[in-house]
Length: 136
Image (tube, rainbow, N blue to C red):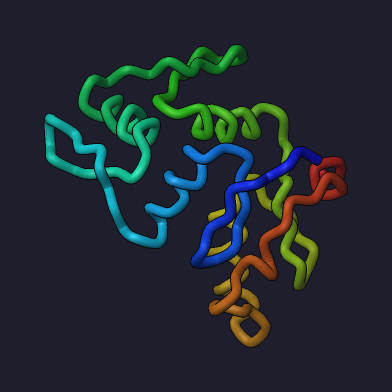
């Protein structure tokens, strides 16, 4: 693994580039130096502002090669692709049921496993499983 000489003095997370540390520090300070000229909303990273701008321009540069549907964010396309592949990489660690979206796992887990669901630490229930993907 590469050297990470730049460390956050608040949480200890390390980075290989100073710019990444500077960007990370904004999560602690709340600084949002990148503002949308259209609506005024501010962001802590420039690439997030660039993604946001697509909501105003209507640009959808990411297209599904299966059905042609277009999306304004790559992550939205990736989530959509699971509707074609049937992949369900998010298993419930309580009952083993698999889901194609993390949000679906969270909703169902909270509803069906109220007594076992750790709402203070939902990441306990949220893991990506290659086994789940193969079972679907």
